[in-house]
Image (cartoon, rainbow, N blue to C red; front, side, top):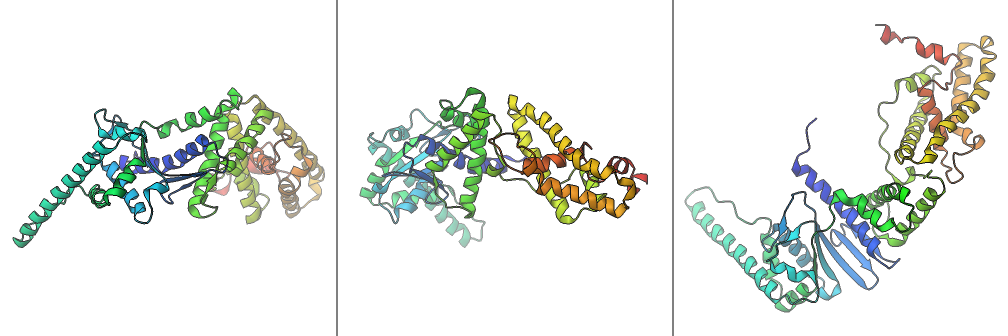
Length: 416
């Protein structure tokens, strides 16, 4: 397997960082009506009561990097904000540049660490850098005109990534430029994406039992990822409110506090069904299960497997109930299986297959009404449905009365 290139990894981490950073903004807000949106007015837009904030994020995986007046990312950010200022006034909000990088100690950018600091020196430095970039680019353009006339190859124009930002900043009216600079806030040294779970844990540790910190933090991030994706695809409103976050945390925290059997599937995007277990496939084939029955069986098996894996991964004592719960499921299955087994010699093969399909349908349609849930706080029927399918892969249950004999026999392909 090839290792992903830095060029592919860095943008992916940057996009994910936007989502996690937006989550942090809601955690920081003290206003339940606050909301964030991603990739609307800026990387992240925060409406916090009367305060409006446009956040540009610069996440880098380059160690030891520092941001300076010459930094390309700074000028790309300035270009985005200048575009916004085309139709808006600086006093309409705050412009915040957050980066995991640090600022050079001697950089005039340090004036942006506090909104009250004077920005005159910084303005002079920014204008100087903008003019230098614009002038150097003009020189190359003039050189290219000469080279073009002589039939020579043109030189590559310099500062491609920062030129537009320099041009836009220099083109701002003086009064607007000064007002704009007074509304900029720089936040260096932000958390890196690798610290996302620790960041979330820092906000929930006072209201959550210590043994549940990891589980709740992972649940929050999984739920948040889904909400962000749906906001980007239009499946939900683009604004995600703090009240939604608090409601989710309250519900999930209550589940963990009681017995740890959280319902995680509603809050995550499930993968496609691929490579079902061979025995699972054979269990369905020997009763001539319909395509719908097969799809339902594979789907519920995957859901139960993922949910059980999450519980086991949390290392919660209550997850040990799963083994005893499986024993209960096998017992309930045996009541129905044994009824057919007792008359197996009087049934044709087609009748045995039909009985098997009926038993399979019972696991999907009725079992969750007749078997007690694993927890009073957990009532997702797919756990029971899918657990029966998981048990079928280990031959602890089956649908055809002779399933152990039939599955132990080699198929025609295996014989060859």
